[in-house]
Image 1: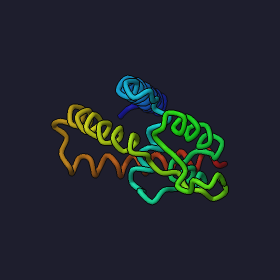
Image 2: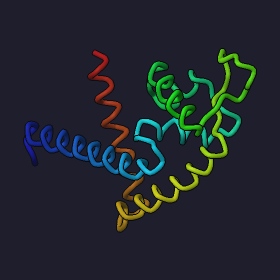
Image 3: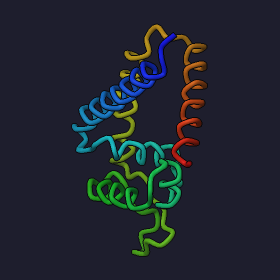
Image 4: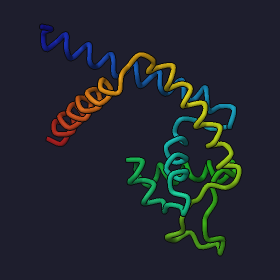
Length: 149
């Protein structure tokens, strides 16, 4: 059995390395669309919600603050991947929706990410993933409890 120090170091290094690799891969794959990893979760949420989402709803679903959503949606609007559902000029309680260009980009991004996931997860069974996500959720819950004290 590993000591607490060894378990902490192994866990910390593994999580940090996974996060770095994910960030790098997302940025590399998204660069052809003029996007970065920070844009991806908002695009995914809008793709899953074709009727649109308000900034507050996006923040909640992406688990980020509203200021972050404001910056990201500003970038996405400027890139013409996202627009407001109500074009009357009022942004209050207005929903963000994917434009046709945003839908086309998401269609391509989904294929790219599906290929990456297949490569990374080859040889891992559905049962192993179920157990992995259960343990990961348990670790996340424990870390949240510690961070809130």
